[in-house]
Image (cartoon, rainbow, N blue to C red; front, side, top):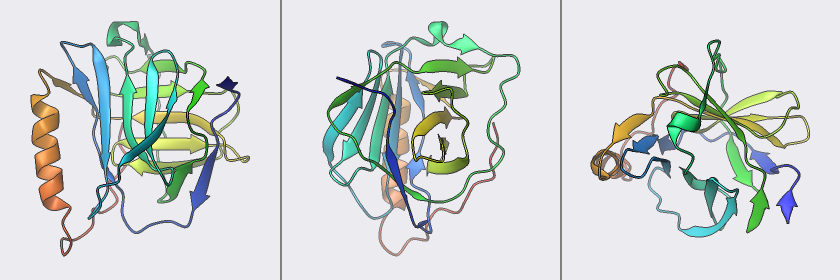
Length: 186
């Protein structure tokens, strides 16, 4: 069964943004976007899948990993790629599990380092950080309208993602200061 819309719950803002970064795996022609939480290691519980996009979700509905198997040569390049200028802190939880979703429309800038997944035509009312470098646009009924990924880096044989994870996990230990809100740029 395919969901008509992706439902989310927006909780009271947290005081940190989870770490996140997009890594385009050159040999696999796939985008991997891991999300790391300060002082925590939530485990995979379920998923939401389309033909080429998968959300890996924890038991409590937090996004852990985004996997796009659509090669970037098939991403739609948009000349006027304008990302949200601002986003708010929030604790976003996905409510649906183990269901299929429609393939989103993917748009990117000319460099293919910034990407937007469009899930519905409806207007977005709110922009929230899902993670650093990942912004969710939500409508008034708490449906996911779009996700914006920025600063995607090329990776060969998983070397960049491994290095990033080691760095982030070393930084996300109790007693270390939380990540501050980055200035949006896309």
